[in-house]
Length: 347
Image (cartoon, rainbow, N blue to C red; front, side, top):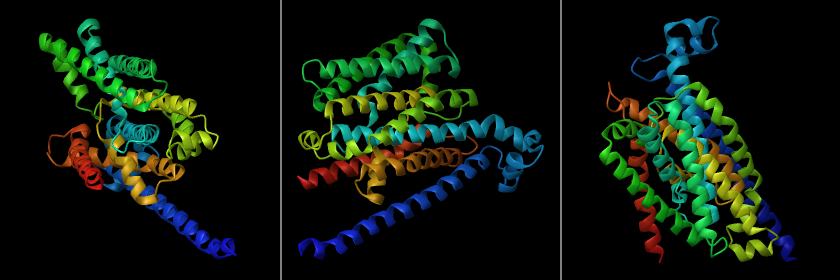
């Protein structure tokens, strides 16, 4: 009798939840489409939506002045914003799940600091001066830093999350200090490095985007396949193990996915902060805590945040630009402060 009485209520709640998810997906998809068009249209030379449409879809449109601007400058920039937004959004969700820390963001694994150190060494030692050159240094440094953090964090404590985070913070501080020393004595390295360090989409090129897209795609698919396991792990390691989840293996896979996603994003655009922190909280406000829905919607909300920040940066200080990393910091810092204050008020 109890089951019969509660079944309609549970079914109604489930229908309402899936309704929220469906509405959120539709709204976010439309928003992302509009922002993509705006990203192609807005810049030093304004283009109308008609010009954008003609340049993209009309025969011969790619050879017009508007078509050249879009093809050479704005399309690679927009595609990179989409790629970076997806990578950082998904990485943020996975990071908060495997650490069970709502304030965690992907940079805690030392990926940003490792990429920064590798870029500085590439500039100072090997004379790398352009984005295509330091891309591979950044990717290598991000991956190596994540491996070292994982080794240090699990050396004496298995997969204890606290040790991983502490190892990441310690290694990041050490590598940041080395970066500071190098740039102090090599002003030429600092002048080149600071353009990458701020986090920008303006130097995007299509080969870079196409080269990193397969790795990001594989990592995103991997995260989606692990969503059910993440739901169990969110309840705690013991509960997850009781539900049949191999917690250690899933956590290691999650760390690998974070490394791939953040390594690609940081290598291509520099360290863009707070995206991995803001996106998971925004999505959970919309669809709840089911990691399947959270990961799916993060595929849209991440690019929305990055493209919106990039467009804002193009508009607010015309004819100049604010880099996207600066804008996301303005957005993310108040969000972080709010989350900290809310957490303290619950204690």
